[in-house]
Amino acid sequence: MNKTKLIKEVSAKAGLSRADVKKAVNIMTEIISGEMAQDGKVSLLGFGTFYVARRSARKGVNPSTKQIIQIPAGKTVRFKAGTELARIVK
Image (spheres, rainbow, N blue to C red):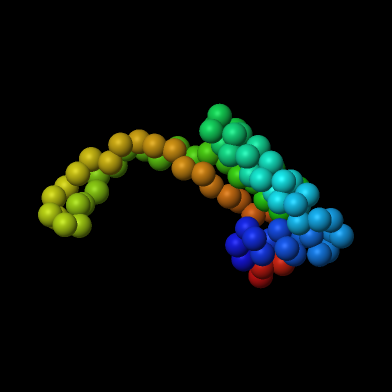
C-alpha cells in the first residue's frame, strides 16, 4: 500500500475528507521523521516502535573491483513490531 491508497482508506473508514487525512498523515510523518533526526523513538502502543540504531564501522567488499573497503559507522532507522501487530501478522 502506498501513501495515496492509505489516505483513501483512512478517509473512507473515518468519514473524513481526503484533504484532512492527507494533512494529518503528512504531519504524522513529519513528526516521526523529526524525532528520528534527533535520535529519538516513537512508540505506537499495539503497533510498534520506530527507533534509531547505530551501526559500527566494518569492512566490506566493493562489488565492482572486489577490493576490501572500510565502511564507516552510521545510523539507521529500525522498526520493532508491537505484540498486537506481530500476532496479526503470524
